Image (cartoon, rainbow, N blue to C red; front, side, top):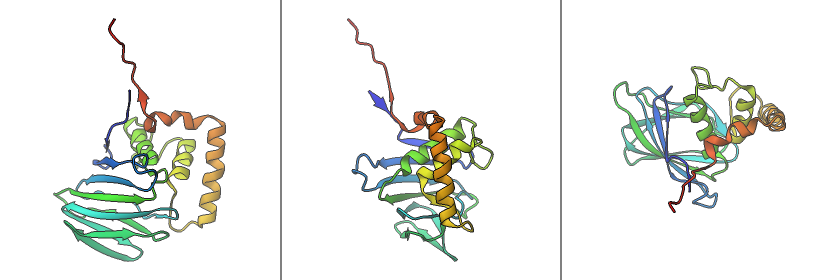
Length: 192
């Protein structure tokens, strides 16, 4: 029997992500997650070249910076971060959390990357901002996540992540991350 937890928790940002539909369950079409975002929580500006994110608020108010515009969406409202558009999401409320759904389309390796990120944080293998202490882990996550930072040429980011992740794999560093996203097989003894 193999298991992966449906929910993962980030003790640095105090948010919880629950996987409602995995890429495996949708044949790679999409991943659907529920995010419980703590007051004043959020992420940094980034963009994707291979998948979109659609947000739908279940409770509270979610703020989304999309390029240079900030929009706020409430319960039942949706917003999309299209390909190649700089974006981030955050909760401006100081007291209340925000709960929302995110559909990542297509699934790519989003689930694996997120499980690795939260796993490294929980194991104390990142700094206080959630950045992996190991350059090899960071390169593998960056390459898997296909998320890019503003202000650095895309070609440089893709080249550097590709180069470093190839070297990380050559050194076997990817094996250290598999425990976070590959189902662990439980040994179940059968009573005779």
